[in-house]
Every structure is written in C-alpha cells, then in structure tokens.
Image (tube, rainbow, N blue to C red):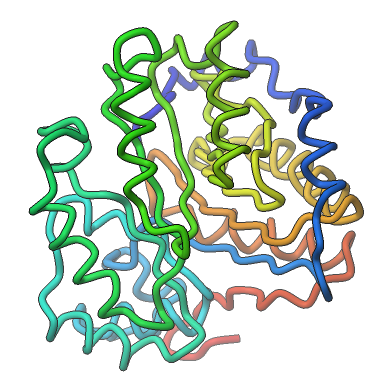
Length: 301
C-alpha cells in the first residue's frame, strides 16, 4: 500500500501522536448498547504472499493453500482482491472451505463502481457485487467504500450519499475518503454527522504522509482502522503502542467492534506488526486474541 508513503529519512520529522478524540466520538460511544466483551479482529490486506512461506506459512506451502494457512493465523482479511476481480461461485466455495465458518472477508467495492464509473450508472456492477457478497454467507463481513480520490465534497457529496443509501441497511458499511477537502471545515463534520445519522461507519487510515486521515471521528460504536507501516521502522511500534491505548480506552467507553487491518509499503512485514499489536492488546487490555505463530522451518512454534 503506497498511500501516504514518505521517504524513510522524513519519518523522524513527522508528529505521529494520535489526535484527541472529538467530543462527538465520545457521545457516539456513550450511546453504545454493547452486550459482552469488545470484539477485536486483526488481519492483513493480502493472503497470497509467497514470501510468507517459512514465516507464517509452513515451509513448502503451495499457493493454492495460502488462504487456508492464513486463516489459521488470522480471523479476517481486508479483501482488496475483489476490487480488481469478482471471484466465481466456485472460488467462493473454495475460500469458505479453506477458512471455516467464523472467518470474515471485508470486501472493498469494485474498481468499476468506485473508480471508473465513480458511483454513477453502476447498477449492474453493483448487482453482481451483491450476488457474490451474499454467496459468502456467514463469512461476509462489513463492506468498505473508498470513493475515487478525486471525488470531493464540493462536487460529489450528493453522489456519494445517494450511493450509500443504496446499500442494504443490514450490511455494515464503512467509508474512507481520500480527497483532502473531506478533512477540512465545514465538510468534515457535515459528512461525519450524516454518516452517524445513517448509521454508517468512518474508516480511520493511519499513514505517515496523510495525517489528516487520522481523524479519530467514530460515527458508529465500531472502529475500522487501516494502519500503514514503514517496514518495521521504530516508529511503527510506537504508533501501534498509541493505538493499543486508544482501543482500550474506547473499549471502556463502549466500543462494540474493533477491526484493525495492517498494511506495509512492503507487505512482507505485516505479520510481524500484527503479532506485536495483538500481543500488546492481550497484555495491556486483558484480551484473548489469537497471536500469529511464526514458522521455524516446517514447524510452527
């Protein structure tokens, strides 16, 4: 993931502290009706990584078995591959067999819908997307929408709102904005207030080069965090430490679900940072999230 990438020499100059929570985030969490414990799900953005063989996949794992091995380590996947190509029905059936009933796919709306047609005149594409989504059954997680980065609040807000209102109410939806104007007044609070009213979630993307996207404004009592690391630079770990503290704090205020997806500019290193995040959450928050196990030769330890 290249979004927000900066030269490694610039990392020391960036202020990585997480902003304080807006008052409206606190109000949203205060309205939570959570029963039981916080649900925390941590995952990566890809499973098809040959360079994970001998790391989190046992030595000798074939590409056809990558997803099955991934699902032994993580409870979910940020399903970005669907952005480029819809899987066939047989693909979905294969994925379900490899992952089990509790594993969740978080699909991204297709490129044809969001980037080529920019949310207009895309009903056929949308129908095909939903047909595949429903084939996943219990494995279907929340959906996330990223409008084209050139779509801005001045010209495109109505188009985006109309599209969001087309999404079935029983499907959890989270939205990520890329155009910088979405994070400026008065557009920011206007769109967050609208999302809150319509019970749609807001994605927080934490990357080095776009600190405006770390807005900390929850519009539902659920968090969807996309973290972009820098190849295990020391700042990756201090940033994760801050997120651990914030998630625990949100938990105390009533957060229902925490979805945390790890990205790196070199995805080779995502499992290491997932492991660190989960270990720290378990240690500081008393959770019991499965910790990824790294391979030593053919033997997982």
